[in-house]
Image (cartoon, rainbow over the protein chains, first blue to last red):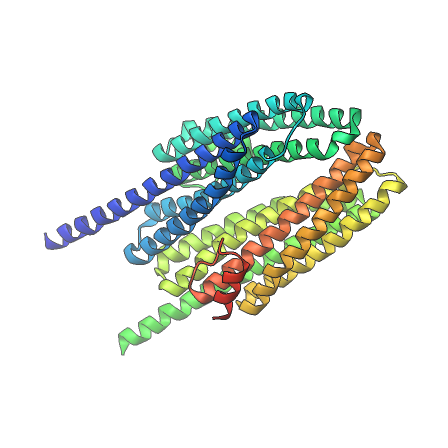
Length: 236
Length: 236
């Protein structure tokens, strides 16, 4: 009886700690959502002040990554979690690494907002913003899927990435045409192109996080398995 | 006495297992070194067959990542390693994630080798190859630092990344000038530019791995701390 209580006690302490870590991941994720949203607004409205704020926030995001990483290592050392709990912690460690890099890309986009664009070039930014809002939705959805460890929601994000890739290709083609028509604009257009690339990479990272959710819930590493097999595994 | 033997037994089994994991990391790293070297050769010699080989190797690299990841999770669950051993395993988990992404970038570069370039454009590829050889050396050095957990060697790689960044900026400027002079060449030049970007990202990832080495040896997370503080920590 004593032993049972002790186990229960340890396990409930573990649960509390893991719950706290998950809350921290959500706080970090929320911050990065804000970063991305602000970076897109900064580009759309040429708001240099907001852009600088996004850039400054990157330091806070970095701190979150180091902090959560430390919490994960400590909980493993202290609690010696069982297989499934351990896999959850591993999923968290991987997810925050992707989240931190999404924050880095948001910072890169914010730097573009510090440049001035002509009104013709402004038109090009509209497509970039649309793609950005799409990725922001993906990020929101994957954080939600991660919070609830929801396989179907994760699978939806995973599939969404293909649409973002197609949007990216369309923007790239459009920007290249523009560069060919007006070669003097190349340096500025390149910056828009880098931002589109940043968004495309963010989409990839959201897809990574979706894979961690599916891998965790299904108890099988589904990374690199391709959409068909992954969908089969997710729904099995 | 029995207990002591048992502990020794467990610990030596742990050491054997961790040694095997480290060997696997080195095997994976060696494969990626080869991938990068082959991708650069494929571009320099327009060798489509070699390029396709690099692209195919990516699947093997992916398998290594999943395999080593599984080994790390299992050794934690089974052996419940002490603090320093656990930190080593965490460093390995992070390093293989960066290594796998370096392999992805090598694959992207190999795809450029499948394109045909005019002889004038070929000249531009020389600078790309030089930058590539520089990054390949960084990758080699950081794998070496990781194998020996050598802080000084890791610090050297960390600092080398700045030089790669400068090389990247120079190439970018050169390519943009070229695009402005000959707008029809933009789509092809863009591919060279993407490759340069891939190399720059590889350098970043080598720098990440260097940080894991320093963090592990020094028992302090040195990521995001900036060069001055990192160097101070590494040498303390």
